[in-house]
Length: 370
Length: 153
Image (cartoon, rainbow over all chains, first blue to last red; front, side, top):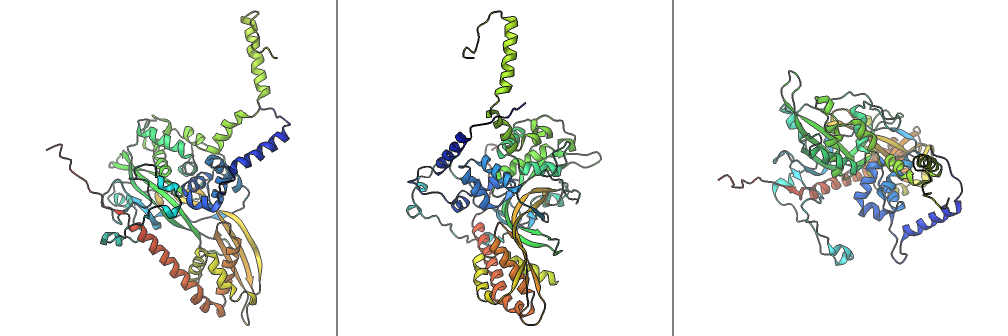
């Protein structure tokens, strides 16, 4: 039981004033602009949008600034802000096959139609700190990419077919099918189990990246292995279409950057059916590759029941995953422990003293200042 | 098919730089008479994804948009038109300008000249941006090859 406390207004006001000062830091250093965060800390912005479940680069950048760079706090700010806005409607399902691709790789096929493009990746960097970055730009060495001269590179048009479609055509991977009915919505109805894949995917899309990463890793280490391959990872811009009631036809609202991972996983042979691969799906706002891969692995792990797999790890347990994935909820519940619990604790204290009094006659008083 | 033309124009306006729309509107803004049927207002559009891009639909998250509706009186003969805008982000002025141009482009006297002076250059600019983006990306195209390591020999 939590009993309310009163008082401390002045201390709280002063604490918030101090927080604002600490946010600003040393005033001899120029203040960082929201536009600088948006442009130069773009992956932090992406994470805040993904887990804040709200696509807007400016708001996410503002939240990061306000939260002093604490991304989970920034996510909380974004979640709180979205509750103040009216909902206009629902987009047409985003078509990732029509993505203007800026990165696309496959770990299953070397020569995949449309080609593999690395895009702006940390992969293959040496992870050595670059002292040049601490210099102003004009003193940094120039890094222009060499123009792509060969024919293959110039044949890249920006859109490419889905890698997994080749396995589908061969009949080795069942195509994704699902009801065309509107999906459930976690922001409107509380989570109930068993949860359909629509609810699970929504939950994972806004889930804490750290938790998803750990769960995905746990499946790889044997806690419910699903033998994944990254069939395709693609990142780029997808156009958003929305049909306003007043117009009755879809209009372009803008474009969003998305990262998608489609995994190819271990075999299944449903009764009377030939053996085939299975699949997991990850989709996230922004350049969020670690998140998208983790999501695909956890999505596949959560489909254990569908393929009659024995549950051998937490990642396969929908209740465990779905109820602990939200970092706003988790952070709230864990951090509420720091609020005054004086009355609860007094109750426990009285109980322990009473028990000690019974068994340990004349024992020392543990709290002499009482 | 009328919708297709309007859709393409609206798309060009939505993706345009606000400053470009502002500069174009400034040429004749004072001669226009329009009222808001809906003042620019921020809201959310739910973004839906599909498992594997073809399967189960699910809510991926929401997107901030600004909507606006204007009613534009005709210049000379003709009827008043309503212009609509649904623009990504919290961009009240951009939404107002998109709605205004949408209304203008539905009026015969404006459609042709505005298509030429504004829409066509916007479409060309967008194509150029996409081409440039694809070119930058193409420079990172990779050909992996597999090697026999020779342990088995």
